[in-house]
Image (tube, rainbow, N blue to C red):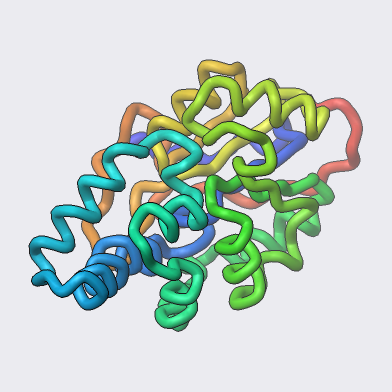
Length: 230
């Protein structure tokens, strides 16, 4: 496992994923694999296994596209009130261990910190309302605003145009290998992969990126004056 602290003296801008990175993916996995199929089974009078197969098949049709993350799409496609169902299990939303001390140190270092997420704007709003992470963010951007999912190559130049950051001195911390691959291919100078997105599941094997088991692996963000990096 390749766990390498970040070279903070060479980093100006920090991009952080939300689900699976800052927040425990257990909420989302439970919601999409248990809550939604169960609600589908009840509404359409089928057993859970049948409902699970139909719902998972529908997910696979859109995986890797912006629609996969669109709650409005799934409400229409599955005939369910997806935002309402999310509210019913919102008590499962949790911040990963060591995230808040890291965000505090990052804020003290003076670097801009942008949350960059594929989550639907409703999901983003719900999670910011239920966790303290928003207090440490310079901005929060969803792929729905940008027009492309993060794993799509078109996302990264569109994000760069929006933020005006230097890709070479930017770090992305994310749990998704396809997202990290797209970001690295675009030219982001630093990427890190979270290997334990869901605290209730085993760690991911990793995909050749420097690994993060928890946020202590990123090292301590040093104070940054805003001048040119070393």
